[in-house]
Image (tube, rainbow, N blue to C red; front, side, top):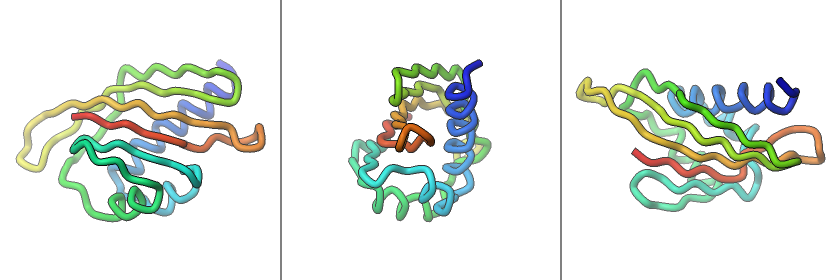
Length: 118
């Protein structure tokens, strides 16, 4: 596995864990300045709004990624994946996501966009 693939695999796991843990500090480190996210409720939020919404406790538990596909195209990568989680009322549920990453200064990866559906 290439170094980029290893880094992106780890970043993907970390990203999903950071959602579950409401880890604003971690997102502040890995989101590009021009980051945007389209949420399951169809809203589009910029970096500041994403950090703000991340700080709010979430009702889902046991968020896990699966069926992850990472495509690297030079200094740009797309990660597609599925999630499974437990809702606030104890039901099992699933979702999908697509995250785009770009290499900053050819050295480290930053998330530039995310799309989440449930």
